[in-house]
Image 1 (cartoon, rainbow, N blue to C red):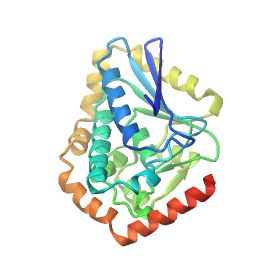
Image 2 (cartoon, rainbow, N blue to C red):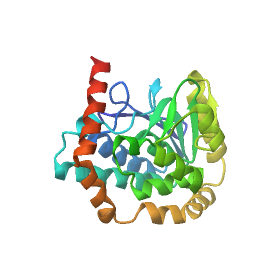
Image 3 (cartoon, rainbow, N blue to C red):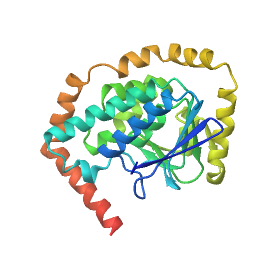
Length: 255
């Protein structure tokens, strides 16, 4: 695995995103995450999963620099695979906790939203869905996932303005559940995980699936029709111009 690391201890798997400084999501990371999620789901010796990143970044979201150069078939395949990963994460039966170790905008936020509980490191970090200002149409399934935790009014407002929330705003709105010192974030996640896995496994998992039944229907629909306007906008001159400007800024910062 080139983009993730996994450590298993006391029936808890800690899956760490590990791609560059900011854990930007590309096709390789999506594929590796999906494969590992399936492996952990099917391993009866693992009771729960903690998803985390690295100091300063949980995940900066999609790797726009790489995705910008994908051709039409590759970007279409990427979005299909990314939405399949979201479905796999939402349907993951075992307890899953996000230990949000830093910034988590856009795709990083989507990964965290799939979890049952979100703990975020305190600091000047942001989280939220900012795709609209970038020129990307948010998939309907992602809006339903956002709404599941925030309620439709907040999800609607935040999404349309591309609002990125600081840790206190995220806590106040229910986007995250807890804020802790960065050094203790994994310890806090493990502590919370123990409250889940000490309960009767089948009862807990079936209850989770029951409560996610409607959400699962919404995120697992065939994405073909939903992707058509998304991909058309991706290739529009206006969105390409916005993306190019963002990429130039990112490259200047890393130079």
